[in-house]
Image: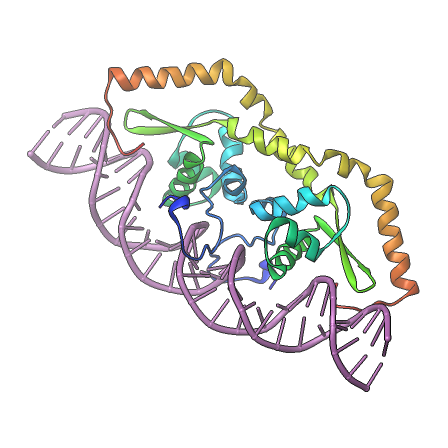
Length: 129
Length: 129
DNA sequence: TTGACGCATGCCCATATGGGCATATGATGG
DNA sequence: CCATCATATGCCCATATGGGCATGCGTCAA
């Protein structure tokens, strides 16, 4: 069902919606890493990752649906290959925060110190955390 | 419940487990983008993103739990601030695929062309896609 | 102390997994 | 056309959302 046709309660973003969701799954990330070495049949991947064949097939299907992987029939087998182009937008989005994590040694650390200090001087004790 | 203490059927990786899962949610990505401009109270964020306050609070909680956001009590309010350090590993992981999406004009395109060609010459018609 | 304001939570729903299994579907070699 | 290998799917479960709402908890000002 196309998401744009959906009208009811949306429980959660579908894992098949985009690369962000696809790589949120550890096992799928593992698969992508393995595929950097070249095309591989499902059974191979499943064995190397210690998962069942159906599991591997399902994860590969998700990866295929978001376009991170391509399939090619090779005789009796189906070879899965990496198509990393969909990861580029992800890399760029995350990269947009680069200057913020680089800042960790000045503004942020200072900010954290302020927090610690404030906590000791004035035991807020509010809410949680 | 700590995942390492979990013994039953794991339905899905918890969204609160790591940065990868946290940024899989579009709205949470929006929140992070807004926070690049500085600390903001929940209500502000909710208004700007067109979501209810409880919704914003919940997303912020997830972001807090994976460490992408920090809170600071400011009188009656609670100011949320960005802590992008957790995005660095994500950026690096995705960056590990850079050479593969850069390759798109030689090996990959060639590969895709081969696929197209093969499809026309030999109508495989197998499985789906 | 009492409101009022700002947030965090608790609950209920409907949904989409991800795993385990059994089985359908494809393709290949006889 | 049949047996067999390689995969993809269909189903059932238990789980973790994410949204909508109502409400509890904290903090501050009068």
